[in-house]
Amino acid sequence: MTDEKKREHFLPYALPLIEEEEIAEVVDALKSGWISKGPKTLQFEKEFAEFIGVKYAIAMNSCTAALHISLAAAGIGPGDEVITSPLTFASTANTIIHAGAKPVFADIDPQSGMIDPAKIEDKITKRTRAIVPVHYGGQACDMDRIMELARKYKLYVSEDAAHAVYTQYKGKLIGSIGNTTSFSFYATKNMTTGEGGMLTTNDEELAERARVMSLHGMSRNAWSRYNKGGSWYYEVLEPGFKYNMTDMQAALGLHQLRKLPRFQALREEYAGMYQEAFGDMEELRIPHVLEYGRHAWHLYSIRLVPEKLEIDRNRFIEELTAANIGTSVHFIPVHLHPYYRDTYGYQRGDFPLSEEFFDHLISLPLYPKMTKEDVSDVISAVRKIVHRYRKC
Image (cartoon, rainbow, N blue to C red; front, side, top):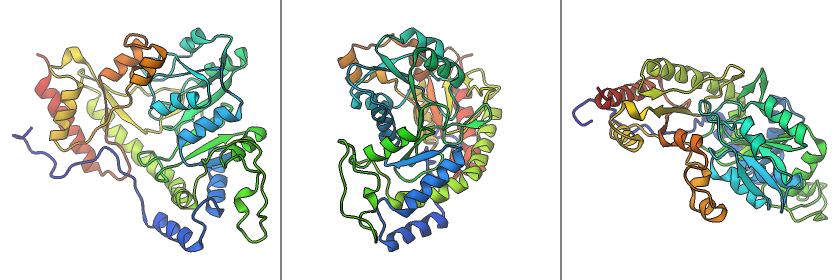
């Protein structure tokens, strides 16, 4: 693309939008002396639970930690099987293994990229204990059908909502449908704490066990033992983990959460620009927006139609890079990674819908720190590449 006008500066695939309120709150945390779990973490948990409309929220150092704790708190372990999607980041399946169980994959719906409930039922055996539905890209899985399966077979449901912090399902924010829900606040997510996550539930017993297990298995109020009036004495109730969030992270999260409606409005506006610009291009498949929910637009992913183009996905990404446009791919299906191939005998062809979805997939920049001019630059670059390499 050297013969055509392009952006002067590289547009990264994703950047967080951190403003003065977050910076001031982090400085306040540093000055207060509470830099690990403390009052800002508790306040963040309270505000997040209220925002989602759920009784309990437990702040963690990552969504991965929340996913692990969700299964561990339910007593899922050796000999158990847990069904999830192959089209997800590896942590979804890794945490099933961390809990001692076996990950079992069910293929996706080829339009939405999310796990197909009919294929879940095909995978249920007498060892199946749980389902981990992955809300892909910012949309919600078909939770009515998944919860129906859970009731029918007496299964635990741990929702992976790493992409779904503002996603709605039939008018209700994701976070309180399954037994637990795990959110991510990684740097690329719709709101960020740098690293961090949250576990939500309406089950008091699960919430209490998750709190204990996320802080070494120590008794409930162990975190406050260094506060005035706190006791040095604690008891380890079970061998837990070091998964708690810090007040420095929560300081970011407090203001990111309050700004989430503004961030969402920008994501929707920019996604709408993409949808309109690419909707007439038969060389591209644009995101299929489901009727039953609100899209959080964590990702804007296009899929190439290979029979319409003279280049493949990797060359298309190279062309975008040459135009100073950053991209990503979400995701390499988990069963194609060496560990899962070598350990469980998976191979290409086992989950053809996930593989086909991945093979032609490109995630374009979509985040509130972008400007309309940035979005227009992405649109221009994509359209130019399609026009140059479309098959006549």
